[in-house]
Length: 483
Image (cartoon, rainbow, N blue to C red; front, side, top):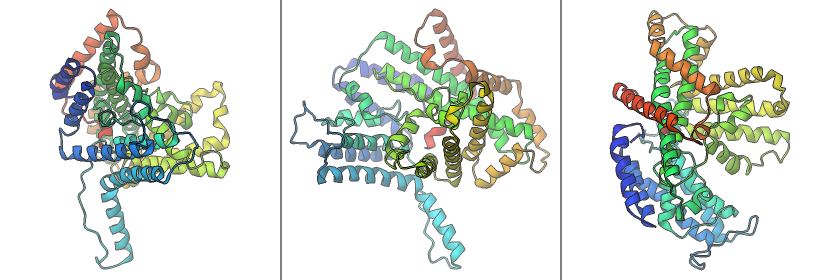
């Protein structure tokens, strides 16, 4: 089930909100968890089993970490930062990390590992004796998000950054909340711990949630989807023209931004409707003047997760320049793999890792403001080149597309027809509008701070246009659902 679908907009969401507000007190956590499991299991009910398993493991590990049952439910201690931990606490943390990483490794990287093993064995041996059978593993939706989120709970309790909980339903609600379950943002437990037990409800908060949701839906349906069609035409056409290649990758950069930022805005809006305040996940990323700045603005919840749970534990920048560069590369390579089980994602991560290391080496943070346009051009070009590997289905197709960006490629008689299909008035209008919003429009956070009649009229029109567009569109994917 996706947010931009009729069944969610006109069936699931109204029923979920109605039941949620009809009940009172602690029952709301049960209702929200129930509807979240229905939402997650809509496509495949077996996915719920994995979600429940991950939740149970980390909940039990959390109990061990806080010393349950030898503590009071009303006085759960915050572990001393840097303090000595018992063998049981160390074992609980290890169990949480291994369990979540094992689930992630099997379902997300099982097929990838088997394919690469078999390819290596075929290169070394002539027989098929060492080949492994393909398992055809189905990737559960959003497993990368909820395993990271659930695992971070145990790590934060162990470090003394968050208090644990003895309430299973509160913890299950935290892990499974449908607004951010399958595509983030990745929420830290301490960010919502107090909200899980006591939330503030108001008409203003609910109204701002509606505004966030409509803006996100508009970004997704009216910008991401048309730009995605343009990108698909460019990427699926061999021998594309140089102009079409550049239009295609820029369109993809708009698609992935408005697809994911739009989803995040819808998630934040739904959270507000339910009384929760989620953190910002995007902050004008394409206005960045360096790759370092880009990662402070793009998918903020993931970049901060990688920083706090991977980069800093590896040593960060505390062990010398060489180790810092290695750590940056390792984090971005693993960040690439987090996005998908393909060498294309590894290369995408490597490009960003190299750029981060180079920027740190030359001290790009001390850049001149008068050359801002030059830094922006460099940053956006690096991002675009990296997006080619992110979008292309294979490594060969990515390399071919890179060649097209520089005028290298075979002529294709159908390229002229594709150019016409890409450059329809509707596509060009959406493309220019997306660029305008990327360049100068205010963020949803800023735009929704003060609402008036004019803004609400614009939102009503935007919602109507988005619903009409859904009727006409057969193309409505969410890119980050597959991660």
